[in-house]
Length: 215
Image (cartoon, rainbow, N blue to C red; front, side, top):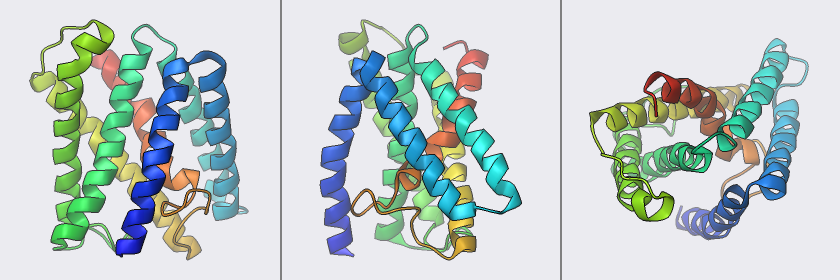
């Protein structure tokens, strides 16, 4: 367990800064990064579900999700909102993994035996905390002066919930295929789809949530 944790941590320390550079740079850099993630995700989904009826539904949804990611990054305040969603998704994932391993407790569902109620709570907790820190520094980084109020908490809750549900959905298909990871590209993490599963679901819904709450 410790070896896996250290490998995941080391990979994250490399991948997160590189990903942030591509996202912040935008233009050719972000488009190339997004295209790479899209193509690898499609390949991993192909290997996971080929010749099954939901394979085609998944293809359509992945395309739809990545188009939403492109659109979100390129609207006004796109960088601020895009990073907001990414922070919530990553925090939900890290919080779920950390709290789940620390506290164990009752299992959430048979779909993913490693998921626990403690992990769900941890995902919410770290998401709220991370966004709070993000909000504090948003003025200095983006020239914004936004209030961290109940509206923000509701949005974080919804995005974190959708991200965690997306993680469970992909876990269900991995379980059906009797595999642990969708790939082996990222040491300690698995494939690209293993890391963006929550984001694939969260980003399209986040666009709707931002519109509804007038972010």
